[in-house]
Length: 338
Image (cartoon, rainbow, N blue to C red; front, side, top):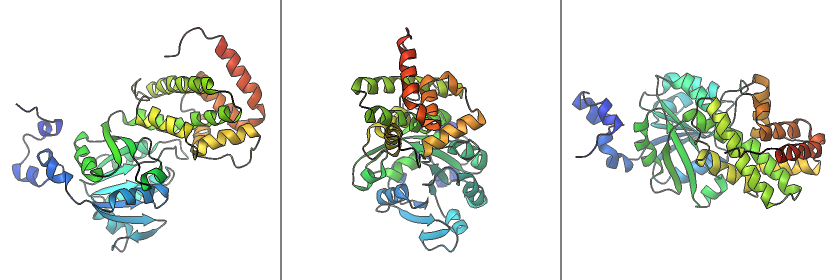
């Protein structure tokens, strides 16, 4: 006997006609995997282009960017939203709230809104928190996080992502969306834990750049990875997340990619700080440090490596002293963090 899915159990008493016509009917997985979806991409930067590359051959892709419909035959954003089955937010987190509120009245209930934004807005909120506040009860929503360097995706190389959804049954849509593409997308849980993992990894990636510029060795890089994951686990749990969530595509996978990629912005920030080039030190990780301190989002001084990154970014002239102080304190630690 085949076990019923959670979707089937929840809908076993639903009207048969309604169940048959529902876009999310669990019985039509194979049919939906072959469906051509109406996809609206919001934002046409590097990731917007990457998503177009992944999806355009199999789906009806429309694109909105900077107030203009770049691709598609709708007159307004609102019309494009009303006709979309999937909406991809390929935008920084800051405009998420404004745009989500603008489109919320026009999104159809079965639409799936997804974001790949990996930062905090000016009020210290994650994209997941914004979606939860705006879209809950109106439509389906979720996040996709993991190592997805846009240049590699557009070059036909593989990317990897965790998908955490407000309704687990929506993974049928994710499956249909990326079927046949080079993006490996796996269903996951812990919406807020994965959000914080992917956001904070940019902070820790800065320290890898510092270590590499100062030629502190591969051994220290190994320590940074272990210590960063231990701290991420503690921070995630402080938000009610799961201890093992950072050991995922959203956490370890994206951290390793960001910390070692030659083109990583945050790795290069660390190198610049170590070289004494303190102008134009900006990025999602830097902004995250400021928001965490400003809104006291967690007890960041309780996490030595995070505190080191904070102090180096906010007072780069203390870099050498703070680094030596951190290593000195580390030599006094007797118990493994994990």
